[in-house]
Length: 313
Ligand code: MTE
Image: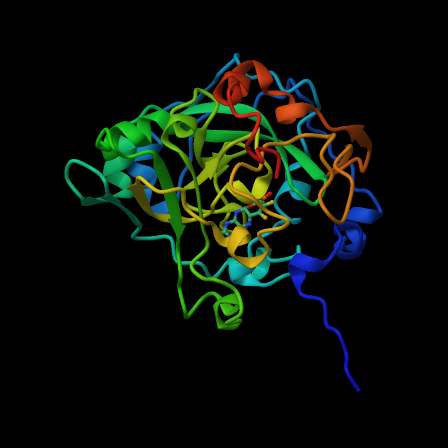
């Protein structure tokens, strides 16, 4: 008998929702909650990072309630730790100390930099940003981190570098997902250098005023809030600059469903489901999805001359 077993990425989001979320856990945090405080990072990095106060950047007004922390940290995609949304306990084994990030490819000087050293060269801030998964769930999170343009500056790409690729950790001893050989490990994804330099692109090292928990991509992850969440690699270990457009993890798996640009657009359905609305983690409220996830004023000019490109998924 032939049994078709659906793999994680083939499941519609509705089929993968854990009961606790379906039942609706409401939290107390509102948009105005004062969450900034000290920027706490991984315990081993605390000496450096604790000294930096992360002030909330008022340019980024989410227009929505902040998602309760328990929902944002217990409903995740992190396939290295398994295909379910409940990866928090498995991800607790992630080893984050020591951590370093390699800069290579088309850079003036390839190098590897320790995270502690890197963090001494940037200024942390807090941004409350909307985060919208291609599976049509969304959350609103106070992230601590620094502008992606700062990471690009530190990496010092050459002028012929057009794309930047983020490669994420592969820890064979802590990540059971790596044994699933049909996935194209390591998880990577990339954007144009111009996109990475956009004011909205962010590197997160914390959330809710605390270090990033492992399941959300400790100790350092990318955020491109106008794109679907799969363009937000977690636990980054390498940043590579290149002239050719990269093919990321999801595009390698299913190019007809996950493309390079992956900009949010409610009018362009995923081949298997609508993108017109999204479910807010925590309240389970369904709200209309907005083009560029509501961040068009920051990013629409990037795509002004790309009518012929498949820029929506
Ligand atoms: N990064 C790595 N290394 N592995 C992953 O499986 N999943 C992506 C992205 N980054 C993923 C990843 C997807 S599909 C989404 S929607 C977001 O992380 C989810 O981020 P969150 O769990 O913090 O909400």
